[in-house]
Image (cartoon, rainbow, N blue to C red; front, side, top):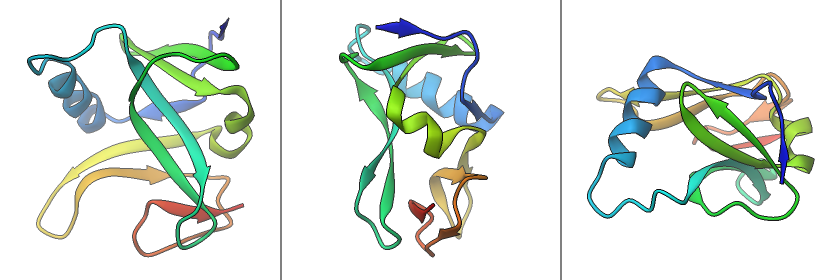
Length: 114
């Protein structure tokens, strides 16, 4: 697994707080890392991946504010410069993605096109 020094994405304070809360839950597997990536599908062609997973071959390893993260090397072209936030309002609750590489996003906020 390759290690990078510069994180391709940023996490807001709200996202960091929520991720740390999830990581402190009973039964959390400390061997897993935060996986940030994309997969085919969704309203606009690609969907965001955000979850805890074991590192795999072809992953880049980086750290954001003490949180160990992994991303498939091929995904960084789609996600470079993206900001991940946590919303906890009446209209929206959950992680949101602000991606400067997206040419269009759908109303659900979890899929995009490049």
